Image (cartoon, rainbow, N blue to C red; front, side, top):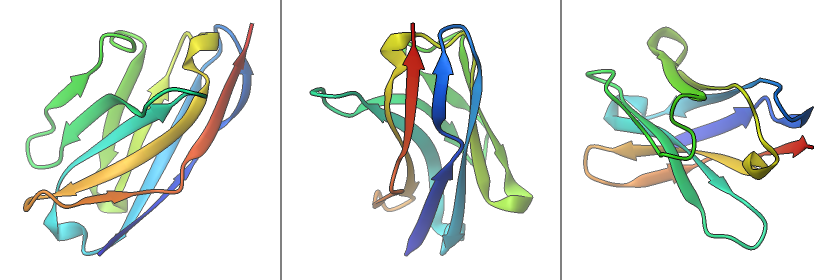
Length: 117
């Protein structure tokens, strides 16, 4: 089992920045990738960014590429999402996901990000 705790959400204005954190605990040695997802009101959960823990390779959705950066601190078992130039359409609940090498998914409880225009 892997436990994930997100933090760093809040209410900001368009153009501002936020940094989200996702602290992992438990059987973290089995984790292959960690990622950030967003669920806007009335919409499906959307994958935003993923990082491969062994290689530090990253993936970004087109909606956040160039504005968001995913990074990791292996010593702290923590993954970050630096979000710059935030837009009102970035509003939603942000979830952290850890995926094990066997393909099992673990999710955090989510953190709310609200961007006002």
